[in-house]
Image (cartoon, rainbow, N blue to C red; front, top):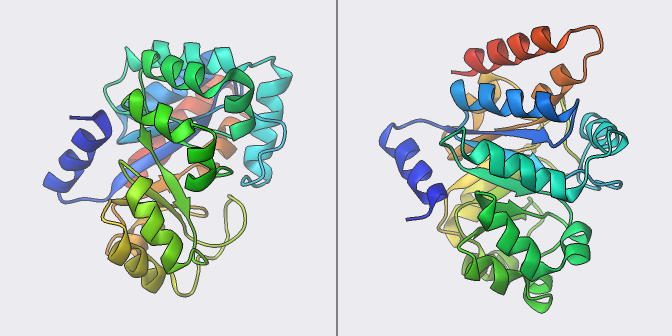
Length: 263
């Protein structure tokens, strides 16, 4: 059984909403990224997205864009993200996912990327800028499947029923639903029709749903609990790691406290 499926079954048995958290590899620097992942795994995270830094992260808001810029300024390469994943997959038991943008995959080559990701202990991939039909054309979907990875697709309120039906045939593991249109970030209002939109997705896609974009508190998680299986929190945690007023030790303590409050 795939690691993501095992974790989803664990969440279901415990009758709770799962938690997916997010880091950008190399931000604020790589040793801190490692420590943050450990704290996430020790304090309730069921999945951790490791973002491969990219110069133009189109789905990301200001906080994540700054994190990507810092990681790139630190000299973080795609190879460093693989090294991070391989190291952390031996230290934490929860599934690690790669999130990023397809240009990095294309440059490396889909076969090499997927094979290396699997070897590094990655369980699934989220690339919001390549839809399933393009993934098929590029051979990405085939290589994902060959290497036993899960292809986690992103949908929004504007995704048509026709697209959802097609996504149901190619997605695996879970589906990532954006809580609103636009980019990631804090203090943004979820769609007024979030519940109805999630119910529509569930009607056509028989996979657990993860909901992100603007989720930053226990109340937010409670608000989506009836219609979502997993809450995704990224910017709220990344904002702590970017706080220049805090020492690294203080950042880690604050992230731990933040995660404990979500339980």
